[in-house]
Length: 397
Image (cartoon, rainbow, N blue to C red):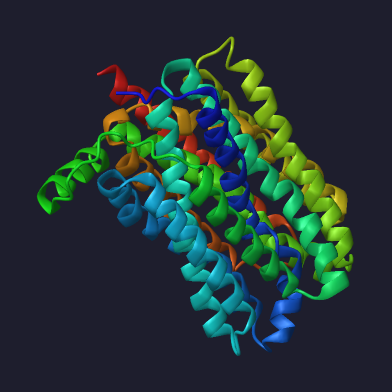
């Protein structure tokens, strides 16, 4: 049963659909321009610092299974306010880290907290919306998420220049506190069909989702698309700041441009969704992204490394990922409307684990050229296209 809200509560929900996904992107990208500085601060290796991104995403993935199930049983609001407050406190504690391993631990815990926020908001969309309205709401969700990668590196690079890299975590602290206060005062519970927590029933629900082949395949495609974006955020600062000798603020500007690529892609998708279904647009996004990665390889082979042969093909790839992620999200979330929290949890877990694997592989890349990055991009989109074809064959049986 869909909740029947007045206009004001729906406005409150849309506001959360804006501020929470933005934090999801912000949590990864705000301090990305500072990765070389963090490496120097902790007197450690680039691999260990890049691992702070991987661990954040691993926490983001693992946390959603537990917190998504709990939101089905105990309500969305309790999970939302608990995770927002915890995120704020852990962000402040991160500033006090004395070594890279403590810092990594706090990043993992940050990921768990953001997992709770993400899984609740995705579930709220299914609580409230259905059909074309749900497709539009998920597009708004991904549009908001896209603003994180767009604005975060630009903001973070300037924060580092003016106040040092730790200022990024003060922003996290304030942001989490704001979500906590807003949710406590303005958010109304949307899960009107609370299910009594039962291990046997929970196992059965999760099993039905995990064993649904279309759900798993499309969720993995979405995760790989997201992973392609985050991978550049982990490798890009070392390619552009360290290898090509651009400043942290210049990197922030370049990242801003790439972020707009994904944003414009998502906007284009929101227009195209009026004329084509999600399957067609998802397929289009996969083929176009694969073509962009092949173009990147050709430029890398034919030309000496410079800023433009990195940014131009990555811009193209990011634009077409704007067709992949929102359509994959819409397709998966519509399959389990009666277990939205659990489905959202599994979707997020797949995202976190897949991106963790992608970034872990990427942290071992040599950054003396963009060619290693290009091969991973090609692998990502070839695998994603194969998974899409398999999902269509399964659906047609």
